[in-house]
Image 1 (cartoon, rainbow, N blue to C red):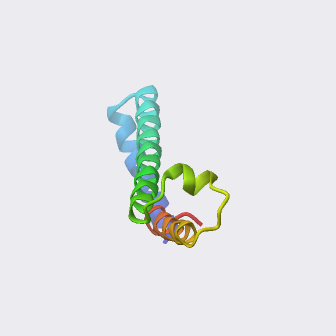
Image 2: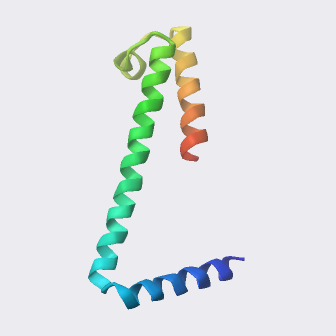
Length: 90
């Protein structure tokens, strides 16, 4: 299965390089990678924000609070679950 995917990827890269020069292809790959990274970071911030709003705590209380309030613990659990589910963090 991986050989088929790798073969397909290799063929698509070859076709792209016939149309676009190598330096342009590399810059496109870098831009795509950065876009994915930025969208993941934005999603992380959004998830943390909505969890804090739902549990009526601030982001500062969530990250730096010394208390072990139940709502903080619950918020951390929900944040972890959503981050794991949406971003496939392991």
